[in-house]
Amino acid sequence: MSVLLTGGLGYIGSHTAVELLTSNEDVVIIDNLSNSDLSVKEKIKKIVEPVRKLDENSFKVYVGDVRDYKFLDQVFSENKITSVIHFAGLKAVGESVAKPLDYYDNNLISTINLLEVMRAHGVKNFVFSSSATVYGKAKSMPIYEDFETGATNPYGRTKLFIEEMLKDIYNSDKSFNFIILRYFNPIGAHDSGLIGENPNGIPNNLMPYISRVATGKLECLSIFGNDYNTKDGTGVRDYIHVVDLAKGHVCAVKKLKTNCGLKIYNLGTGIGYSVLDIVNAYNQVCGNKVKFKFVDRRPGDIDICYANADKAYKELNWKAERNLLDMCKTSYNFEKHNK
Ligand code: NAD
Ligand code: UFG
Image (cartoon, rainbow, N blue to C red; front, side):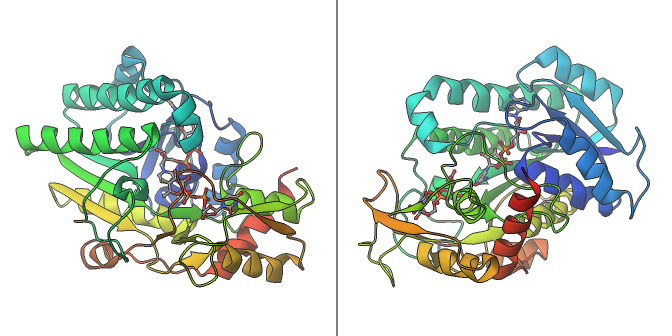
């Protein structure tokens, strides 16, 4: 009996694979390597093997595309899959504005295919990687799960459409269990330094950019705006350690086994840090190597966004445990390992 992770060689999926395997769950991964590579499989094994011996029955990786129905059908036929965590997808907001069709094609078609194959094989447990982006510009902080949703770019719309699709499917067939996890800002890396976030090209997101400045791979961080209505004028977000986030998925898989129906949870820390807070914390860890300058605001950015994560604590028995220094230390450690 295995948990299938689509996109399981990616940033969040690889950390989740480690946490599931060390919690004694068997794992099957499907990944098309569009934003990852096969070396991650060996790295996951290297992290897990001191705790648990792995073989083809407990950990298997398929290279293939979730949009390929025949391939998915074969994976479901060859394995006894009981739950699915759907990470696979494209995730860059700016790119989604430039290439909307790629986002609708990859994110929506993969999800429809997956749900159809699940239905055909009688698999009814599904966790979906959603995002705080579905709250758009929230009316107040912190953000609760019942806040109004709305998207401002094609990436966010794919997340919202999928959330709506899951609700419709659940309304038509109550034997499904769907857990929608709305992640806030995942950062950090595994303590081993073996897996972490490694975007292609110039990073769009704050933490990988800072890490590359700290290790001399990039010159200087541009801070997008210092005139927001926040404590120091820079944007505020709810940064969550990727290992904490991964553990949230282990709790979600456990919850699915209770026939929970459709549930939505914020996964965040409940704490908002500004860009300058992050730079200062990182500088403590790396010895003041993060040079920065202020530039204009980035179009589409909001001033502030942080979660109320009480519902996940009450119902999943999950809460984030790692602090900002842990997030910076592990990011720096990963970046140094990662030539
Ligand atoms: P990632 O790009 O590191 O991982 C996604 C993985 O899916 C990659 O390994 C990629 O090769 C694979 N993939 C993409 N399309 C595929 C397809 N059609 N078939 C098979 N494999 C495919 O991204 P991540 O940061 O790990 O994000 C995982 C999920 O979480 C995504 O759905 C993303 O939208 C969501 N999310 C991420 C963040 C974040 O800041 N990282 C925030 C909120 C939500
Ligand atoms: N920022 C900079 N300079 C940079 C990059 C970012 O100042 O080079 C600032 C941004 O303006 C923002 C903060 O750092 O104030 C965080 O920006 P990120 O790009 O790291 O993250 P976002 O909050 O914009 O968005 C991320 C993901 C989205 C996801 C959202 C919520 O990119 O896909 O978190 O989960 F939806």
